[in-house]
Amino acid sequence: MIKKFFIILILFLFTAFFCVEISYAEEIKQTKKTAGAAATKNESVATPIKGSAVINLNSDQMEYFEDKDQIVATGNVKIRVEDQNTVLQADKVTYDREADLIIAESNVKLIKNKQVIHGDYTRIDLIRSSILIDHPNIDISQLKIEAKTAKIYPKKEGSSKNNTDVSQGAATINDQSLSFILSSSGSKFINNKDVIKNPASKESATRFKPTYNMHTKKILVTRNKDGDIITLLNSTVKVNRYKIAYIPSLTITKDSETGEMETNLPEIAQRPDFGWYYGYGRVFNLPNGATLKAVPLLTNNSGLGIGGLARLKTDTNKTLMLYSSKGNKFVAEGEQKLPFSETTKIQYGIDSYIDNGFMWKQKHKKIIEVVDNRKLFTTDTFDFDLRSSAAYIEADPHWGTGRYQIQGDFHNTVPLLKLGKHIDIGESSQFNVAVYGNGKTYGVLRAGPTVTLNLSPLNVWLAYYQGGIYGETPFAADRYYYGKSNVTFNSSYKLHRFVSVGYTGSLNLSKDNWDNKLVAENQIYCWFGPDDLKFRISYDTKREESRFDFNMVLGADRSKLDFDKMKIIEN
Picture 1 (cartoon, rainbow, N blue to C red):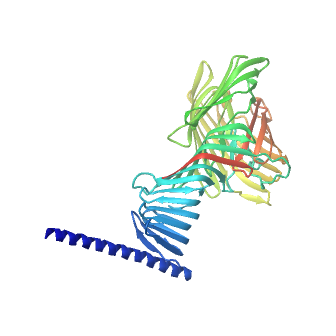
Picture 2 (spheres, rainbow, N blue to C red):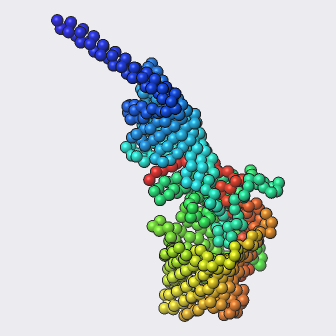
Picture 3 (tube, helix red, strand yellow):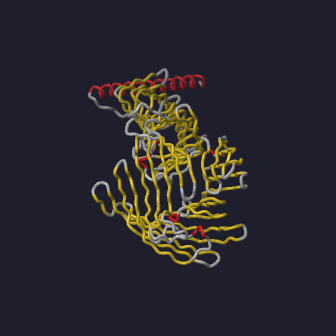
């Protein structure tokens, strides 16, 4: 009796299972018929399918392969994976129910968390919530990315945020308003950004068509609600076949002025009280993307000497040291960014000219200073910038004191008056108040109109200041040198497609500085090279300082930016 009961039970279960399979197959066949009918009418049908994730599938046609337990959809296929906030479009999609895989082929478009990626092939693993894309094309903020593969995976288990790993690709800057300049020595000499720019066309007007390539080991993209932060790590720059520069770390934002790079170029320059120096050395790559350039030098300062140069560059620190046996000269300068504030840094120098706001560069025997530069407030027409600092200064080895200083700069951001198409009138007001450890106080106030002339190929910025001076300073270097009546101007003139000249000057009309000189600043520049790659020679007659360096535009038409790896992090 029991035996018969088990036999009947087994037959019943087998019959029920067989009926369910027939019912499921009929449902798929009916889905295929419905989709086919819809395709005839140029409509699509959404078919909810349940596996480890709920997906909605639309297509012109669908087929079910029972032996493989796969659904193959073709023609205007669109799949939505509900719990992964993912939409997939392609010409053909295969859904493997047993493996819980979605495979898309031909004209693939993936939309995930508002990020759009195009590719040739995509595989979605529904169990692991990961996505693999072959030959992806991605637009990320200022960059357009083409790569070999991309993999998207959860930032952590159960998280709605994702990370993306991209391998072996190339990037171009697709934001035409962004002109990101790389410099071997900083941007302060670029008085007019038109001196170096992206050429209007890939085809040069001459037969000289130089190209440069930047290769970076890793691009890190951090996606925040306020915008994307793009950082290039361990990059090398080549002009044609020649490696000329190394960039340990470079962050690209719309507000960036100029990035810096370390070069393999010879060191040729002149510094006050140090003289000329010449040398060729090596750049050493340090951990965390830092670099150290070490150069043996031949020096000349009223006689030959030997010496050395060491320059350290990290994400947060830049330090230069020079030594010459002639006169036993040692010079050092640098700055250290502070981790708790983007606007604050420490700068230091030994027998070197250090920036002091609108008081220009000043030279002390020794100085270490904490400086904070920030925009205090802004309106539609004006900005007010505040520079506050605290320093310890030595005038000689036997005496030093502290200095607390505040500087303000109130200036227009849009023209107050336009005279025709080429002349803009503005205003600039500046003040400086310094209090010293020995009890002395020193103040400067100046204000006046500004004129900007944009008449290609000539560009000029000119200001006239009327000012006043109060008190005394214990340091000769801190004395205001530009006079109660002053004219300051910057200019550049494009002589030729490959040659531009520039001039920065300041005239003390009242001649009330300590040496009664009319010329307070006198700096001459000359740029050579095509629009997007400029070499510069400069000379500062007041400080007897000369430099040789170069600038390039990142992402110019004749340039190429490729990478080994890219990581996109969603925050």
